[in-house]
Image (cartoon, rainbow, N blue to C red):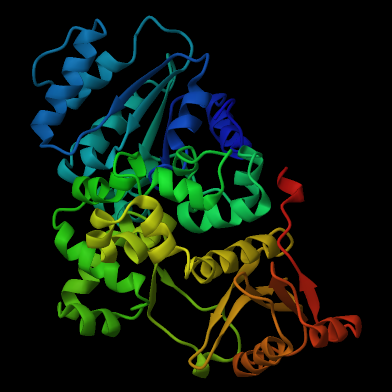
Length: 449
């Protein structure tokens, strides 16, 4: 991918803590592939640092593995040391500059052992005045950090100096990182791979999205072909259950009751598994933008939030038999290409929200019982914005009328009305735009290139 780009704000955050006096503990979290490793590597460049990747194993095995690594690095260490001995072996006493200690996937340490955090806090507090350390705790378990971690570690949470979530990149950021793609390819890649740069690196900028899907997803020897089954097997104990739930969600079963009717699993069981999927940033619970139309608002909507998971369960998982019998090109032409533009529509709506988010901080979507508004934004005062978005087809005057209908249901009065479309607009819409009734737009990536 070349030189490190796209995370300047996060690097600044880490460096601000590094130059502070004394020792610090930071938590850095984000989904797999979002760029945490590249960020930490860039931050540690030129600084004294050490790295340990925690395993999914017993507490005793964890200490054995860490000790073995430290012995290889020259530390005197017992076979099954306690955490105080491990921390002492990690940070070289002879160092005078602040040392960085990176512990990756640290949730494996915390989930299985209540002694890790108290020992870490005691260690850092003992080093406040001399030979300070900066402990960076990294994890891919974003939902666990946001929903469970504080309850797990209790009062120890007060000793954490900073928290940072490394989010998926926006389309604008990715288009700057991969400038060889056209805007059309960027939008389609985003629908397939989402904002995870590690996935984008598997695609070629010299090929269109169709060619990339054929060669880098449908090809049985490609990394992305096996990515999802390997990932679910590594992270989740019962992949058969999770596959069933995700397959149902990929077919737009987005309410708990809809998933229950399709899968036959109990609602209580589904809730537990959805919680686990949310902890991995694979599923999200979608909240409707707050307007005055609460009586018309849907509640309890779940959605696959990882774009590649959604693509896999929409196209590959239900068609695995065909994938074994057809060539990758035949499979793409028969199973993917006909519906793909409409599949891109949902990602396009997210892209439009990102675009509006450049100027409005409070941005979301309104989920109505009779219809949705793709983009709703507020400036925090009296101003409000509503927009509909379409990637697959040109927008018509009827789309504009439907948006006005949904705005009435949502009790959104006044404000700016916008329509996004990459395929253009009909003549009646252009006439309405000329009269100032509606603003017609396409996604712009100029600022990202």
